[in-house]
Length: 562
Image (cartoon, rainbow, N blue to C red; front, side):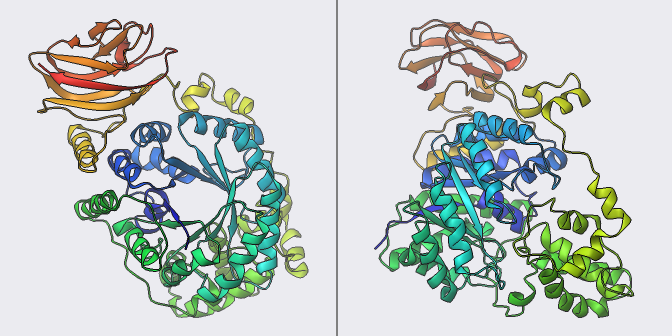
């Protein structure tokens, strides 16, 4: 029997599938991270460029700061970034120099695992991306084999991609990504062994959504076929269109004799946390899905179907919905069988809608479909129908889009946005501790209490009001943040091991409330406010809660009230 590791997708993919990618803010993630760290997951599916854009646009939160805080709260678990080739936030192509800068800063801020996914399975593009990520210093890079059903996506097709991953030293592992949840046990019996054999000993992971109820029955069989790691979600962020429930997967695997080395109590606490959050924020809870045979034909996820029906209803043509859905497989075949994950379902459904409502097929073509045919998204897996390609590219709009300027370089962006430094664009200097608006005393207290319940010490932010003492592990440049804590009449700090140089604490206004040398048992003056305790040689006074310095190391810091 096999030993199986798990990857949790609650923060990114579960949130995206069930909570429209907007349900989790920085304060929620920082609270959950210590529990997820304790569970023993191999990695957390943590962020994408889309989520970084949502953090800034929807929540006015700094996504780079979010990474930094989560890394402090979960210092040993891989935080995963998933990318789609040379694109960042938008689906427009980004310049390679900009992508290298982004990868560099992601690693600096705390991302340690990257998924390289090309929506067209362009292996040359995948290899270029993997090389850039490794150049940035990423410890783990995983290549994606995105599963779909079509006449060209057979086992040999995926085994060929697996061989490319096996032969490239910049890839550490691979995973079968099944975003539409169509991998059933029958297909898994041939696909997984073919991919595993081609990988040449590199680990294989499986990521399969619950869209039509197949992944829950495929997962228990996957370890016997060669899968080393399964992707799961916690509590209310599982099932539905998300991934299988972690607790149920663990129970099933153990029942079949497999070993899953996780902390079950911490996993239950993490599920409870998300369940409490769903209740308090009135967020939906994932439920198991029924099998839908028609889905295997059109492969359009529920969200896109709902949008298409709404668009037809708004123009009084909802009665033509079935015609549009019948047109979808035909359009997909003519466009070379794109995998039906964002943005391709939207493109295919929009074109199918235009074809049904127009006087003739391809009379109207949206810009994104034209860009697709111009190979702006990469080379299609199968050749585009020659007649359709000629009709699309012969229009004047196609000639205009073909002349679009190349993507800007970082130098171009600096000229366009003068006065904005690389630090401001890509997160602050590693020696700076940032505080996102919205993380308040109650958020911090809840996070540390849950961490204490799980039986381990929390790295990063916590609240000590009303406590006699707290002991945490802190790694410079992470700051220990005692938010709105009342220190009365005084407190003392103990650093283990003893720290050379000057250790400084400042309150929210920047006034220094503590400065000491290398000895332990140093005093912190009485008062109420936000205290930032920094460990570092020769830091001196820290103005306005910022720091810089060269000292590095990990320390146990005990804050005890006198």
